[in-house]
Length: 509
Ligand code: ADP
Ligand code: MG
Image (cartoon, rainbow, N blue to C red):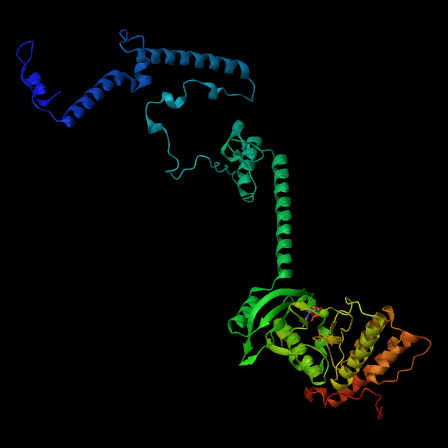
């Protein structure tokens, strides 16, 4: 169809003259007009439904109902009301005079709030300070023990009052105890029920406290306390250590960590070191008092120190002893640094693997024999050159590394003139002798011979072996102690050269 054809159609109608064109109107006008009309219609239709209880229920009065919807709603409401009435009757019949009643409230069709025609009755309790679920404060009975007068006296033993009081008391249970929503109801707990609930709560609390405690202790066993961690961190921060790796051992008195050395005052720290952290939990050290309290080198200072500082003294003692041993050429760790209760020393082992303890290593019989002679020599050096008794020498504190026996763990080592020094030496000798004999070293000396070989003392070994031998040792210790008392040992210096009363019997005794 061409353009001229269309033109002709619009201008010339075959049914007569065309109607004058309608005045132009915008689309928005049309739309808003339609919307207004629609709203108006809706309003008219539901005008009576806005208040169902007030208007709909006047169904008898309204004879002319034009809307089907309204009619249906009116009928439904009427039906619901009848249903609820029936329910109420049944509820009454069911409950009768019984004290315990059952409510059919939830089965009702017309709920109370639908009945109420305004929201004014509803309390938005979240906006108020009143918490409807909180139990009312129980009424307190005055001092005289009752309220009311004459027949209406209520004593504090009143069952209902007591029950309510008990319910309110549940509020005091620990937060983790779930008391349910009993607090919000008018629940009455008998004394018996309340007491067993209380008992249960207490025992639960104690149980969980015990569990918690156990957990705390177990972590304390493994790790170090925050102060120590800070000290260790500072060592890394200062560059003394490069990196602190894992824990090698957790003993009763110390925790030993492996670390990579950095540099200290421009000197290189060995690539592999250990940090021996003396435990700051003091109870273990109580048993070890006598190793340090009676050590002449530390006696003076010991009495003035608080327990925390005494632990530092242990670390210091180990450092001094190691230095002495090093001087005498005994294979032992090199001291790198002492920081409070942390002793940094060289690592005996290689590539993060610590050298095995003598108790764990399996050696050929030749090597075992060799190890015995090494230990004998080390003990002699320790006693005669370093003027020390290890005091905890056993297969647990000797490491086997590069075909040599290394001595470690010398924090408790004392000088032979310590009031119990010789007894400690005897114990060391017994450990060593027993170990090598058990490992089949036939050359291993007996405890007595070993003691005499190390100390250079010639204590006779009689028929009553041990008892006599120890009695002799104790007598010797006593003589030394007297000697010390006479000379006023307090003024003596710390160094090993000038130390000590003779361990041989005094000529002037
Ligand atoms: P404790 O007093 O707890 O027995 P030790 O000094 O004996 O402390 O160390 C405990 C364990 O740590 C040792 O048995 C040994 O395995 C390891 N250890 C200690 N010092 C070193 C070290 N310098 N090199 C390698 N391992 C070490
Ligand atoms: Mg040890």
